[in-house]
Amino acid sequence: MLKFALKRLLLAIPTLWAVLTIVFVLIRIVPGDPTIVILGDQASEQARADLREKLGLAKSIFSQYIDFMWQIAHGDLGRSLATNRPIMSDVLSVLPYTLELTLASLIVGTVIGVPLGVLAAEKRDGFADWFARVFSLAGLSFPAFVSGILLLIVFSLKLRWFPVISSANLVDPIERLRALVLPALNLGLLMVAYVTRVTRSGMLKALGEDYIRTARSKGLPSRIVVWRHAFRNALVPVVTVVGLYLGVLIGNAVLTEIVFNRPGIGKLIVTALNQRDYTLLQGLMVVTAFAVVLANILTDLTYGLVDPRVKTE
Amino acid sequence: MNAPLIVDGVTTSIRLDGQRHDVVRDISFQVAARETLALVGESGCGKSMTALSIMGLLPAGIASVSAGKIIVDGIDMVAADETVRESVRGNRIGMIFQEPMTSLNPVLPIGFQVGEALMQHQGLSRSAARAKALDLLEHVRIPSAARRLDDYPHQFSGGMRQRVMIALALACGPKVLIADEPTTALDVTIQRQVLALLADLQAREGLAVLLITHNLGVVASVADRVMVMYGGDVVESADVKDFFARPTHPYSVALLAAMPRIDATEGPQPIPGQVPSLDAMPSGCRFQSRCHLRQDVCSTLPPLKPVAGNPGHQVRCWMRGDT
Ligand SMILES: Nc1ncnc2c1ncn2[C@@H]1O[C@H](COP(=O)(O)OP(=O)(O)OP(=O)(O)O)[C@@H](O)[C@H]1O
Ligand SMILES: [Mg+2]
Image (cartoon, rainbow over all chains, first blue to last red; front, side, top):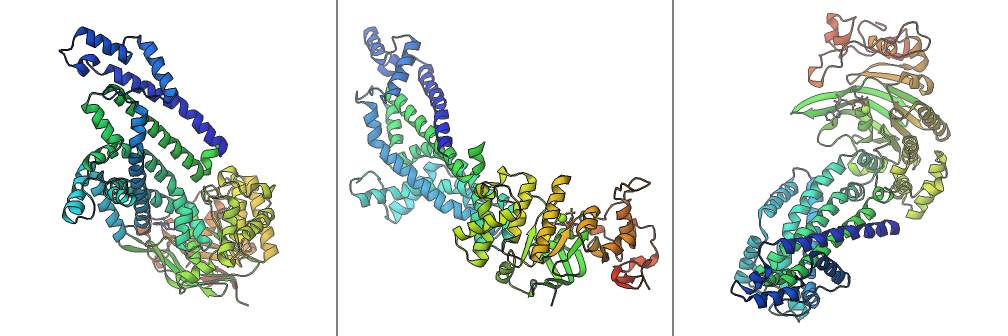
């Protein structure tokens, strides 16, 4: 297992390198001269040259690339154009909020989605199955910001159970948790839709396999047949979807943070876009890319735990 | 003493598009301790359905036993509720399946899979079940079994997996073993080893074995009695010696002629025609559409009749057997 994990980590290096290169290229092929975009077309030639110098754009593209990689390798994301603060510390100060939101919705999504999918497969075409299918179809067709606004109207404005502005009081741990509930539900319920679907179809496939008949021929009660024998096998596609969904989750977190007015990476991205803060945007792209690659590594490592065939291949 | 396995007048039906079809029709037999009964017949004749009926493992919502009694080691499997059946399965009766490659769970270590029934039925702890699983794997002659307890099915060959399946089925020391084409998926030398192993274990533990196969060579070498099925009906049943000496039902004769033999003057003769599909089964004798002896009387189902005054040899044919 350790060898498998090490191998997987080593494999992540070329992936990261490729992703970083794409970020670097993307930022530089945005049409228009960045100095004009930032300073406006009335800016003097001198001001633009100064800015170019400051951004490192005066150097050759190759040495820009080397600088970029060198800085990242040292955990340095540069300074924000707008505020001149180190980007890394800005990111680190809001990262916990995005992490707690992502984690909480991941928990909501799996804790509700997995049992619902298992139940739907077990009682195929029964009430649970019908409910799961309607629910996941509804979930799949709702954009995150629409469901977020609906949740706000019902639970914050009408019922007044949760704060409208999630960032109102984040120091008191109870208040912070209360502020987390609706955004996490919003993201989590959308995820339930995906997780329920794959769990259901994975379970249906597993329950039809020969080894299930073997398990039943041992006289195991159906609870054990379902959870120990079928579910362990259905877990592989579930892990894949949860892993892939982490990427979607990061994207949806942006929308959710805006709707619920929460601090986080999403809010920071919007700020960077509004202020045309190129360096901050670049830094945020790097962080997000790291997060997605990390999520993929975790997914792969989980495979190794779930399916013994992965390790020996 | 009663036989460990008694099947009495069992009919198993499946529902397809709202229609009921009998895939096993009024079948009766017993298997005594130390005895091997071979169930033979073409693909689709209802052999597996018979086995699954006995195990109580028919696909839910599709197939069910609609008449008859099945007594396993004194317990009526048809009348019993599911908890009772669970306590019988894997405990008093074990089953080996045709496909060793897919019949073991790919994500659980084989030692655990073999010992699982012991934890279930005998309340053994995980470590005690593991120790017993090691014994069982050594019994079925898995080389260096101790090292392989924690291996997964994909690390075993087909023949080795079938040995694991045998260990798994015999873990709790059942009285009855059903082997549904246990060697069909294996190559010939491995086939012979697995059959020899089964015979050995049977002698040691006094098992009643129901062996399902369509290989008459296997029947000749390991079975005590044969039962031939066609379209869900038993068409002939006899001691192995009597069966090969005097095959009586036209279908049995055709089956034997279809078997390649070293000493034959002619090549094997395939049986002309095909098994009718479930919704096209003729009433009466189901073999009539392929039978060269067919008469008008064949449209009513013949009873099982003795052959040459021998009550142990029975045939279901109007044209054959004693009147
Ligand atoms: N799950 C199922 N759904 C519908 N029909 C089925 C199902 N399983 C079996 N049957 C039908 O029941 C009949 C008996 O099948 P069974 O599996 O008992 O045959 P078999 O004698 O074991 O054949 P084989 O030698 O191919 O294993 C066949 O006509 C088959 O088409
Ligand atoms: Mg079969």
